[in-house]
Every structure is written in C-alpha cells, then in structure tokens.
Image (cartoon, rainbow, N blue to C red; front, side, top):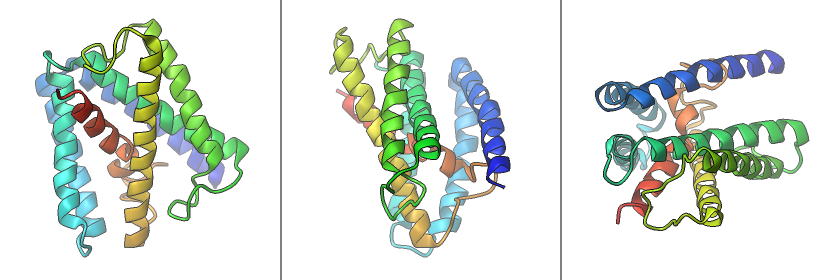
Length: 217
C-alpha cells in the first residue's frame, strides 16, 4: 500500500510540476487564471477543514495575501519577475523532495508530534536538496537579482535560499498543525498521493509571502 502511494505521489508530481511551470512561463493573464483556480480550491479546502475553528477568518486573509504575493512576484517586472518566482518555487520543491526522500530513507527521530511523518533526517535532507538546487540556479543565473538584500555574492544567495527552505518547512508544519486540530489527515483528495491543493502548497504559502516582504523595500 505504501509503495502504491509512493508511485501515485511521484506520478502526480511529474504531472503537476511541468503543468505549473508551463503557466508560470506564460505569465500574466494565463498565470493569474491558473492562480485563481488554485486559490478557489485552496479556499474550499480551508473552509471545510477549519470553518468551526477560531483561526478560520485569519487563515482566509493570510491565504489571500499569500496568493497575492505569488501573482505579484511572477508578474511584476520592476521588483520581481519570472526568475525570482522560479527561484522561490524551485527552492520549495527541492525542500519538499529532500524532506520526503531523506525522511523515508533514513527515518530516525520524529521532529514533532504535530506531524508524525516529519523527521530530523527529513529536515537535513530538505536543506541539502535546497543547497544543491541553489548551486544549480546560481550556475544558470536564476537567482533573485532584484532583491535589495542580496548582492552578487553567492554565499548570501545560499543563506537566502536556506531561509526560504526553513519558511517552506515551517509552512508545512503549520498546515499539519491545523489538520491535526481539525482531525484531518489531508486537506482534500484532489491529488493522488498528496491529498489536496493545500497539502501540495503548504510550504509555498509561507515562503512566497516571506520572499515578498523581504524584497518589498
């Protein structure tokens, strides 16, 4: 059963990542249509999961802000743009993959009772995969060149990517916490092997706003 779920997870990722990248590369109108579709599903999943809890309303506002930052980062040619969007997106993806691979392979002590599947080895794997991805992005010049914090110094870019990876992992734990309180395993069942849209973007939903706020001024 676990092996079948693993294959479903891999197959879903192989479909979703290129699909998302396609709309990301198109940008503007098509990207915003795609983003609105994702937002509506995320809102429905959040509503069903948390409608009876005190964090329901604050969560809606934060989700709205998070999606706003994604659109702004991708479509703004002045402060952000495609390279910056790809930078954050790929850091989040590498964080998720690294955590999953290392967690499944090395196992070890659990990170928190909030999410029983999270392990310390998974955290290490997330940072290692992020490091590898960042080095690749630097080599391909896909780095957040518009930021006011970073210079051309690659060391600072690596540190910056680690901050985003940490934010992505924190977002994952945060959504896990809400699921635990709500008594749900997944936020939905739309994506085989992953659950709902919110399960898939839980790390991005925090990483993108942090990137946006850091680079706002």
